[in-house]
Length: 236
Image (cartoon, rainbow, N blue to C red; front, side, top):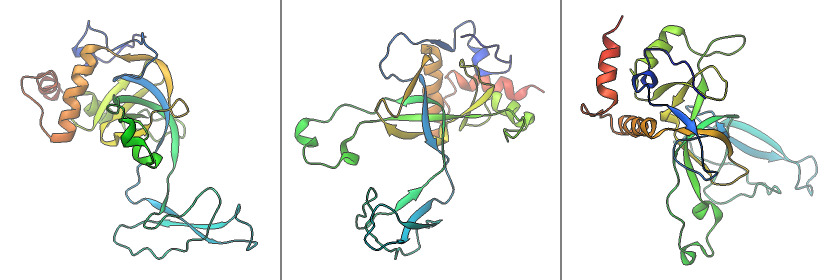
């Protein structure tokens, strides 16, 4: 479970307190390390447009076109009825690349809704979700793009509010936690695969500061990150 974090890293700064601990519970909890299919975030999303069928009466197969979805562009798309992907007024279908990757639970999704609020509402309005932040591989090797070592060194020094350097306890190499990619996923066993690990209390306290930093731009001077960051940025 213990990884040999570089001396210049937030994880080493809280030593001998552990960064990762074994998860004692099988329940969802903040700081739990999971696997999930998460989308790549494109600057401009893509949309899927049904444009025709080989046979007019066949609703299970359709020819589609994929094109950029620009927010200011009027939508005059064809609305062919297709089994499995019904069309609703004002809605479009977004197409995204996704990959199964490690992620960190940063929010448990709030409280269950009262029954009277849930009755008769569509699933997307009431289905429980959690908030997660994905990890991306940092090392450069083979076909992996990764990041240049000088940049990873800057991340280890806590220079950027959107990135946290990490050595995950699941055997992967260097990773970056992308706090600017925090997103919701379904709170469902088919959407989440647990690992055996979660952040320690000290690590979660640092995570809370980091989330405040990325969401507000403020890093408290009397907190845990600020003095460590100041020292790291001074080093050659």
